[in-house]
Length: 299
Image (cartoon, rainbow, N blue to C red; front, side, top):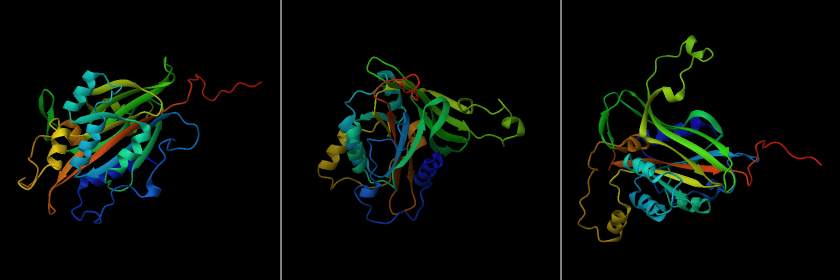
């Protein structure tokens, strides 16, 4: 597992190859593709952050079902942060760890589920690579719109384990950044203290920065949807008669930061195809907090 695998997956669903994949996509992953969510993606008694990416396409009803099922559950984010992320095109929901496979199995994934292990991150690091944006692209912000420099949207993370009243907890900080295109690396950049820190490589969106604590084996799922995405209305529409519904390409609109980073609408085939990358963050923690996790008492 490497971060490059996640980059390849997101690049694949964003590139929109006109040929498409094979027909008859199964309703869920094959049995040998179903990971055991009860254990980390690495061997050994590890503690740290685990990332999973579900790449899907044109599944508004299934996305609506996912959000409708879990949006009432509290998230570790502050309500103000959760509202800001929702307004920016990223819907955070909490899925119980024992229901994660069931939730994932209802989606029709493009390829297999991608997994990455980050462990503990004392410094900011890229964890979710997003799509590139051209210079002058227009994106929507909660308080207006902006034209972007050329670059790539991505999510930065840092996290560590700390004690709490309820046992070990993982302190997580997230930030969405537009990483601006850089000049070629020079010898000075490679010198000690010469490289630019990840957090200084572009524009950090203040409305898409947050920090919170996650408990053992919790799963925070981040779904890229427009601020006007109404799960209840979509489910009612699909359940009722739809003979009179007019078919056609989606109405063009200025994408939010979240949509621009993790979703795309590709036109060129028989019908427009919307692709999304759903992000899953899992806190892997021990049963009890130890300052020196490798230390064992000897008789």
